[in-house]
Length: 262
Image (cartoon, rainbow, N blue to C red; front, top):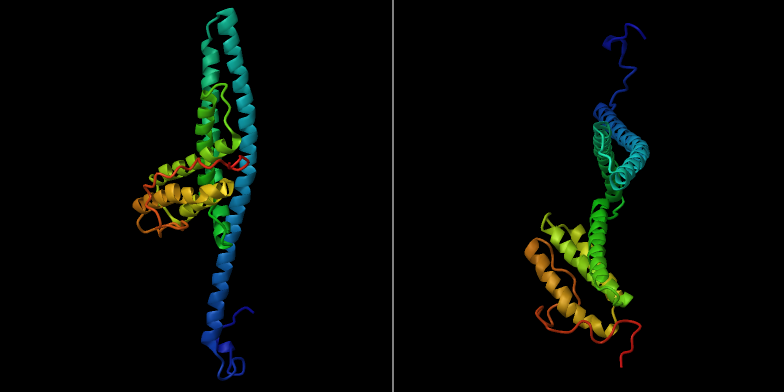
């Protein structure tokens, strides 16, 4: 093959009427596909590497937290029982451990973002909900349940019906979702989270309370959503226009599921 040049290719090698542009186009497509596969391979490699590193970082963090817990117990014992001062050496070791944990957290956050980005791309490819939006909704739900749990604990010995507790927690979830929407521009994905919470609430309501819920809560939230982001289409609230959002209907009467309607 050495020394081959253009003169080596005679007319008999290249048939008359051959479609060279088509061949060149196929070559370009091949190179493009090869490049895309290479990029996908690199992304998958980064994803797998980050998963492995996350596992190792979590193991190191677990060990560091165990050491930190032991040091805290040691200090509490010395201060409460022996009344001995904490030595500079101990303070230095403690501070070094805190800095080490902070470094692990930063590294862990970096690899978590890589994994989330890759999962988000896969979810988008298959038409699934954005994992970041799912995580956002979960954090809002956790915040809402934490708020309601604190209020429940402050009631002392008084008991709260579990169905009412769940309803209040889900209504509070809507408020936390709205409060965090002010920090970001609302998209259809965030809007779908609110609609899903509405659907969940309706499933827990007594049938006699559905119309009241739609008029007193859903329509009001729909107006708030439109004010936050006018570009978003109005939320699909049943009977939306039949009663103004300022209706004073009582959501808690008749009773909730499992209670007598008499």
